[in-house]
Image (cartoon, rainbow, N blue to C red; front, side, top):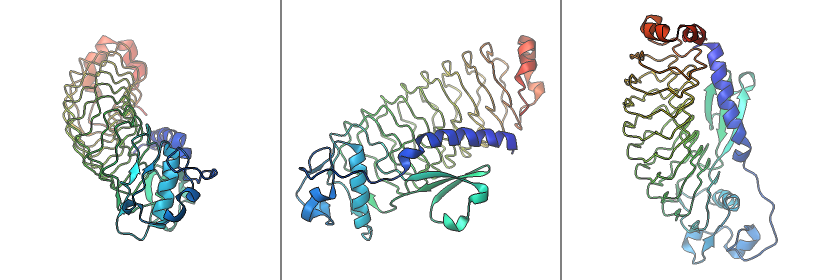
Length: 363
């Protein structure tokens, strides 16, 4: 693998993850003066004699309206109940919450290779990218039940389960109002719950949703993604993912950077995808070793960036009919792939001046 290209991949991914890293870090929020519990403020004092008990067996209703307070409460509650085989959190009422951002997310950090010692991180989720290690530390790895949460009003699942070690059963969640799933299961290495029937018709962003979720192999064939605009990093390093996405409506998607990069088992037929609005295909299929779909009929007339799109892939298809009129950057598009320069005689004839500048097979 090219060191230069791996560096590009590393810096790009780390930039993305560091931009949300501060939210992953678990911190105790300042406690306010005791008030009634059913309000946006949580403190241990408010629980009084209930603190430390199995709250799934009490009559009180625990309503939260802020995800930050919910995260704090859950972290405290799980820590106290960590010896239980199963922890039921269905006593929590989230029906008034609009975002579940970071509620179950763990800590995230990037460790340089020369400072990384395996024994220090043996129980953590570690992903190596070139010379650096992305390290996830989950504050809990218990058997947690949130299967009956009322999520009908939730609009955002931003990094909700990122860096978590728990394989939550959330198959029956109501996601009909969710618009943003940015990083929802990012680096959640054990997640493989059935979410095939989730309602995604309002979702506009699937950026990094399953990035690094290396165990996820769920069926997403019935998802309605007709309003999705952002597929950047969606299945990046989702090494087990191989759902049939042939019928996905991606007509509103504008960005597909690293969408299937390192999705090593992905083989779905994408020949009928309508990608005419996509502007960036940066490393879309890089290292997707088993991807062989016919993309000859793709309309890439609005694509500006094709850099490393098929780098290190094992397939080739006839792309001579592609419209390159908008392309400005295509360095390394076919780097170390099965494509050969002789496959692009038509490209050379159509846009000879542009073709010489594209550097399709160069780093």
